[in-house]
Amino acid sequence: MSCNCISEAEKRITEALRKDFPDAEDAELSNKALLTDGRVKVFLEFESARVINFKKGGSKRNKLTTKMLLSKCPFCGELYDEPQTALES
Ligand SMILES: [Zn+2]
Image 1: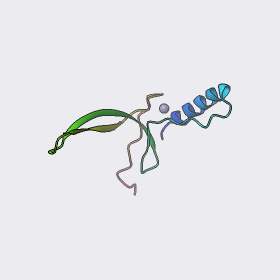
Image 2: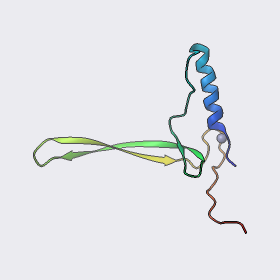
Image 3: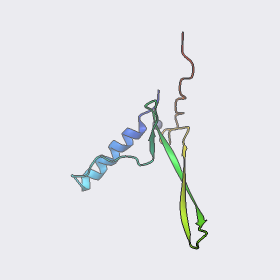
Image 4: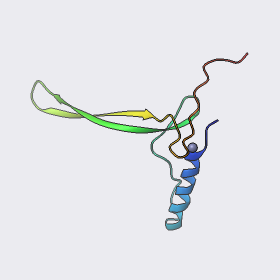
């Protein structure tokens, strides 16, 4: 079972924002990933770029991003659950 630190942090941030801005919408962590099994994990995003040179001249800078899922909750350190790979019988 995973912790609920992300939703708790979002609630705390929303409450803090609404002290100054009562009409603020719910705060949401921007770097969280909803997995196909319903779990939510935090990820880090890395950026790079490459330059594409065209034969006719000129070039274009192409941004490259890669995401890395964390294996532990960044708030409490709990290990995220691993997906079930075997059925119990
Ligand atoms: Zn946690």
